[in-house]
Amino acid sequence: MTEPTPEGAAGGLTVRDLWKVFGPAEAKVAAARGAPDPDAIVAAVAAQGGTIAVRDVSFDVKPGEVFVVMGLSGSGKSTLVRCLTRLIEPTLGKVDLDGEDILAASPTRLRELRRKKFSMVFQHFGLLPHRPVLDNIAFGLELRGESKSVRMERARAMLDLVGLQGLADRYPEELSGGQQQRVGLARALAGDPEVMLLDEPFSALDPLIRRDMQNEVIRLHHDLRKTMVFITHDLAEALKLGDHVMIMRAGQIVQIGRPEELVARPADDYVKDFVRDIPKSHVLTLRWVMRDATPDDVLDGPVFAPDTVIRTAVHAVAASERPIRVMDDGKLVGVVDRAHVLEAIAGGDAA
Image 1 (cartoon, rainbow, N blue to C red):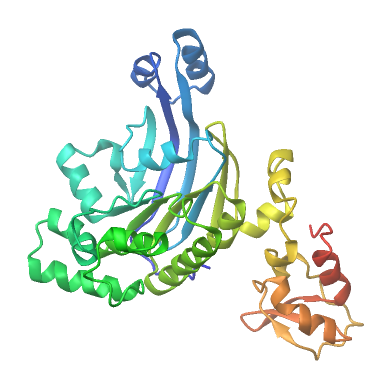
Image 2 (cartoon, rainbow, N blue to C red; image 1 turned 90 degrees about the horizontal axis):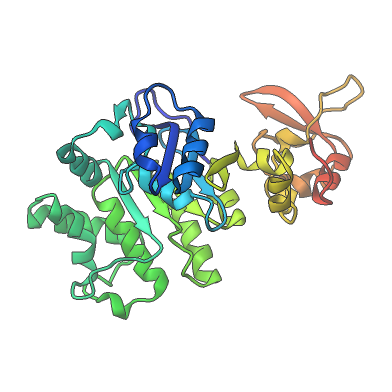
């Protein structure tokens, strides 16, 4: 989904050795000097009491990508996303935005970062019931001290961007769930943040509206190239939206990879169980099923890029008696024949 990001682009996140401990042991863990010792932290929590909600988590989010954190209830994903902006204070670790240490930020600087660099969209929309749509969208700009003319102009632009033309004067109770969440997205975008944090924003919506909102996120991301960290418990949603997906369990990372990597090469039985019912042809790309060309191949058939999803190419492959070429920047990188595609569609091992 993500195209190459220009050098120096803003919105890159680096998370290293992040821990969040709740309970009596947190003070002792936080006071520890030097590099975190996972065994010592676990022992301290066991001895003094508490819960490890986020355990030694490290990952990178590139500028302009959609990074999805996926896990079941209790996996630590929502605690993690709140630690990124210190809505929940991490116990240990490091969070950098474009090289700036968020955990070292003063209260004044942290408020500025939350208002100008980050935005959040939650499952519960949090709209102000006594204000019309346009004022709800402009609310964050009002808190920043922007003039009324500036914030109204920006709010109207965001209203059009999320497809809510004609609803500026409606109140939240007059909107459907999907429309309310669009207002939430517009409000988050109004401040032109570098990073959008979306914590299960569509979980309360019915399936059809949820699908529409997923498509809306894809469209907005394509148009705006914002860095997004998206939290979900739904694997299909994660695979649809994410450039990279991080699967968590019990506060720990189980696997990080591109959607096709998780489906083709699950790290363990836990991930394998998750992806078992996912149609491989809807996720895997030709890169995963192509083979090297041989002197016997007659290469005059269709041409596709290696990142083409298998189901997109299936008709061309099925209609051709010859292998199709997989080209990357004008260079032949492999070929795909009918047998490989049929195996993938049937759910066979594409590794």
